[in-house]
Image (cartoon, rainbow, N blue to C red; front, top):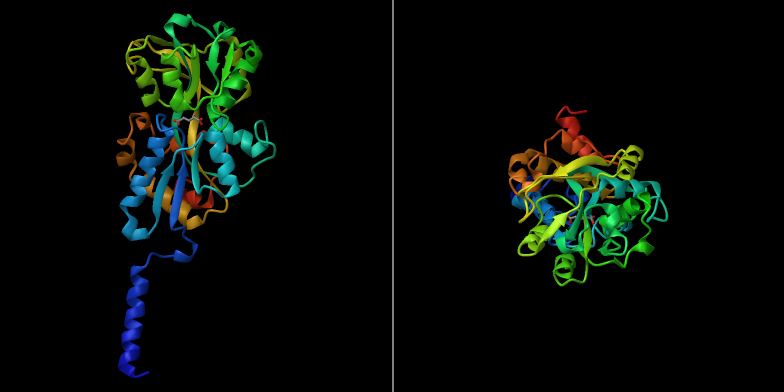
Length: 321
Ligand code: GLU
């Protein structure tokens, strides 16, 4: 090769390498985040994370997309099988997944945490006419427990078992998807539904508009016992004024949502996603009212999975560990 041609080739290669994102070999080009129903908070949360990542597409070459799924249980299983790159899940579900407890038949040992998200409240939405004022009033009522892939189905089943209300004592044990619940209540096909969700959510805004509902407090002694046994559950309050006709705050308990992945995701990809969100925390928080109380500190707390090395790399870089 003539010296000039060689020079051009070297210059060309140098330009190519200086423009291409670093570590392309270990960086996934497409990230899919498994979320939940479109009317919940997981879906807009996944969309908010993707928006922050895609904003810098030209810098890193990673394209993020969001998928509506059944929820936490579906996401944990799909991540473990390699069908999703990231997902959102309740901390009680990820604990059960990691330990192979019901509904998981074996420990999903490859699940890893990226960061914690908003707190979710165990919310029991009831038709006012059904006169459900406390958990015990659910006997003989038509109640949606939840989609089998959802975290709320698991959490609600566990709550009813802990409070001595067998599912067989319900007039109907509903397995509807979250998106179907408001219409089913409005059409008198259900008396109540459980939803483990952040607030405010489009789902409850929808049903509360024009339909008289109440949110049932979950403060029974059996709830206290459940909390004493499970550190990922905490007492919480759904503030009044978020939904039509619900002016007073309602006491209940809740769990944190978290962004999770699998150990197979590259360190580089995990690092970039964590960095993108933490470096733009104010912008991220502005994307949904449920993120209002998030801080860089509480986004590293309340998780029940080991952190992914890519998340640890960012935390170390910040001097947080
Ligand atoms: N916590 C719910 C679940 O896993 C999903 C809530 C949401 O979509 O915001 O089933």
